[in-house]
Image (cartoon, rainbow, N blue to C red; front, side, top):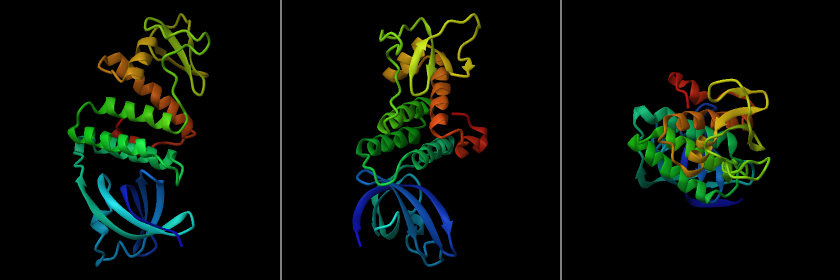
Length: 242
């Protein structure tokens, strides 16, 4: 039976399992997303129940050859990220994206670092919306769903910040010409966004209010496609919109 010892990890999700056990989703740099059964962890005398909490960096050991592994041990790795109430739903949203979009047992070392850095930003409650947009973009790129932001896919020319584009998922931005006023009009085949917003998202500069708003709706449109239209539970908490 294969064993993995003392792997750095964050808990993404914990669900009750049978009478006293729990199903635990963790995220690791070398093994990606792992599903574990933590036997007896919900009993009154469990010594590790308090450790299996989101946003706490752990060292986790497990065993098993099947999809669902067995938790052997867990210990602290010296870092607890104190996400405050104002950013808690945002942090839960990040966790939910990882649970729902990551395949199991795939190495994601760079994404693991990005995840930690995103939590640190949320801990400071420093420009939460920007942190989420950059995480979403990097997550999609890591999964091979690269978001084309800098070039017109129809002509190959650089995006013009003064023009509007129809962004089509799995295609990219194409020129948009319409007499309809207003930014970000949802279409059957995509979503309309200003070139400046595409370039701002590409450069990670979302200080402009319109760019921030358009980037948020653009990323929601793309992510919803890969979630196959299924609702994101954390978005519904406290009626928060990402």
